[in-house]
Image 1 (cartoon, helix red, strand yellow):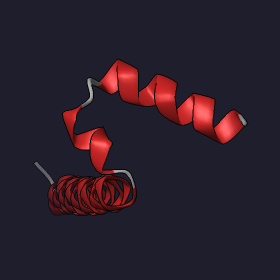
Image 2: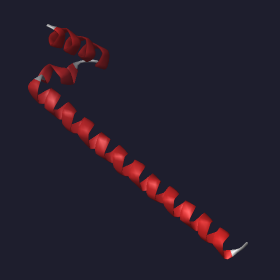
Image 3: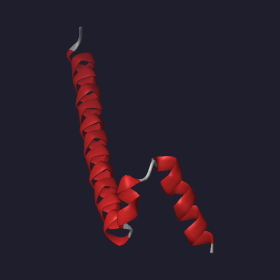
Length: 66
């Protein structure tokens, strides 16, 4: 394999690895945000902790729509 082809393959792999790291960072940031938002919801509306997700969704929709 010529050197320039090896360099191209290595560059592509470095790019793929960097993209994979970015996806992991984004996923962890989203997970952290969702946990924090859930904690805020439970603090403001303690009954949320005991509700099923569908029940919570219905209750939030009802309260937010007025």
